[in-house]
Image 1 (cartoon, rainbow, N blue to C red):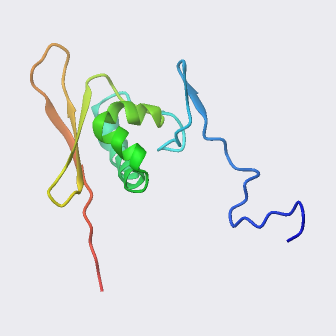
Image 2: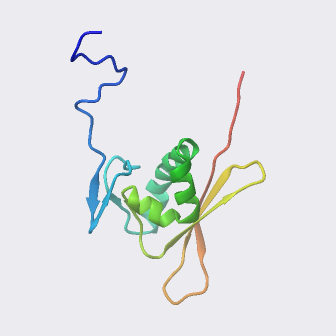
Image 3: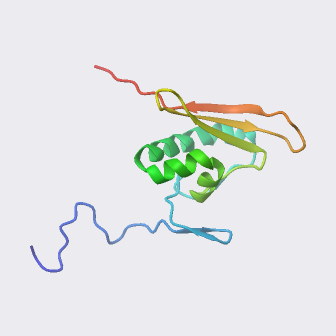
Length: 129
């Protein structure tokens, strides 16, 4: 091995720093959308959030710490990962008998007891031959 020459499969120098600052908090979480994203209304949530939640599910599958955080406080986990939703949005994460996560996004207007489902996402494994 030559001194000073790296044998790493993935070079360490020149990598992006994943630290990002939002508000007063500093985070070391990779951004789920590649950059900070703010969704402003139901239409934007329906259009963009399924792809972002798919990335969150994939990350939860590989990262047990993120999975625990996302399962218990999904809105905080998304915000920590650069995804900001309207204050009217609620997210429920549950696991089925087959241990597959299911995510339901609801909208609840201020002062209302009722919530309406905006979208539903579940990881489904499909094998082919």
